[in-house]
Image 1 (cartoon, helix red, strand yellow):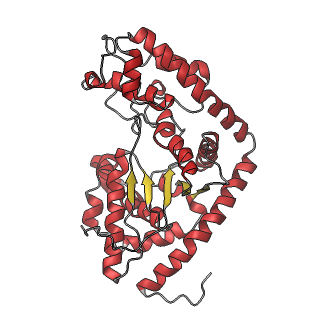
Image 2 (image 1 turned 135 degrees about the vertical axis):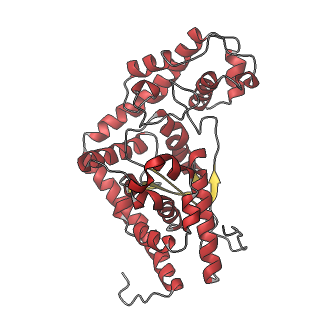
Image 3 (image 1 turned 90 degrees about the vertical axis):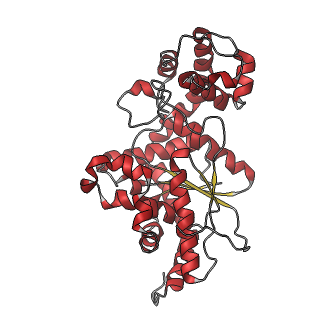
Length: 347
């Protein structure tokens, strides 16, 4: 792959990230993404957040369900503290620069790079001949999502880190191929105690909205009773909590619950252990359930309120798309010029 070497030109700090609206939002989405998205607004940095509905259709989606889930995801962003006036919030398909730049980056990326993506291998499995071309090219579209805004930083989970590394390679190759320093070499932002929240039924697997068992996850649409019951039924081992974080090393379910507690409380896992060391899960789980309900119930209530006015959600997404287009279109037009395309009918 191309070596991602950045020359000294400075790029204004801009954060970009997105979530697929292909299922309900979970506690994992909240702690690993939405909570952090809202916090980044307080850093005085430009933030661009996208519901990546074009990524969603790399596997078949029911059209009406996709519309509903896109609106629900937007409600989840807003209810979690993302202010559409302070951040740019939109759905990907409303800004054509994503698809246009993706084609150019498809011509920069190499087949070998794409074939090595572990998510492609995991999702396509043994049936890769029947997988969509879109699923294979997904990482190039992700690169376009990021580079259309010259984003310098992307909050990502560990499972998306390889795709961001590919974005860096594509940006570096574009710059090298055309002798420019046009795209930044985007930096990942991986931080926090629960950037990767695990299943409540299996501490070795990521909490997923696609898991067949609803008991494996906490949905942001769950009511208080459901949240409390799921936590109290979460899989654990028979031993009490250890004295130190190191004692959680070979106890994935215990480590997951401690990390969730730390992330919700805004403290370190070490602080959780200092408070609850030696506690049996019979007392720790109710404490975690109370914390989760107190933190998540207002989000659920606000999401419900927002979803009662889908036209207002559509208006918010449309306004965000206009603002996103104003940033991305000039960048895309510069790309067309760099690669040698005549643009006599510029928008």
